[in-house]
Image (cartoon, rainbow, N blue to C red; front, side):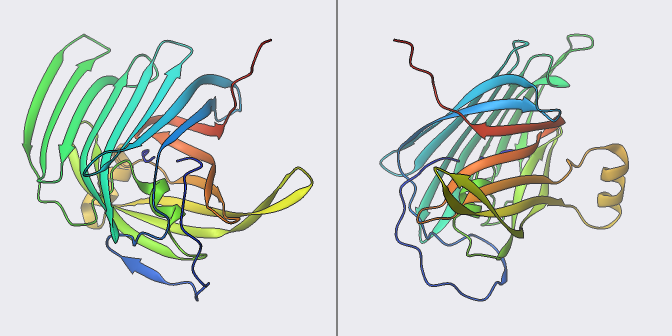
Length: 259
């Protein structure tokens, strides 16, 4: 799952630390999101570089729009666009997921809005067959497609929060997603040691449906992310599948100036 969702955003001062807790539902806004242009390096799980990406985030009149764009060396493309509000809690407004190229099982273009209306268009890589469908889902208030990293940045140290996402497999399926604390770590930067929060993104489908989903490979595995928590929380790294396919890694990158 991606997506998720990232980088170097402005925030308000951190609140006093509290005892770790478990919550369900929309995540409270602690750090307001703003404009961002972030650069990413995309790697396979064996650490070989397979592409690059950018995160573009811009505040609009009524919502924040975030676009994650990944370009693979094999010509594949991943694009995730998320619109959300941040009035006391983070709330999804509109979402679009585009996957194209050999890195994915099929080409996919899916949209979802807060009313529950969805559309899915797919093209098979095996036989070129195209399919299109649409429908209506009943969505909870904590639907969080494309937002997990933003949510994690706003959790207090050690907290765990359950929300929901719609997984396009390619048929849309409402599943739970646990943003769970996985402990603390640290990194060195410029001779300084910075605190890092480690989180797991755990898809959750209960009962017989969940068991069958795991057996059939319809439920993606857990993903991991690391966030630097000094002063203002900042994305550091991600490891997991982009909804479908193998495990990939995302890391911060910086363009090189040639002079």
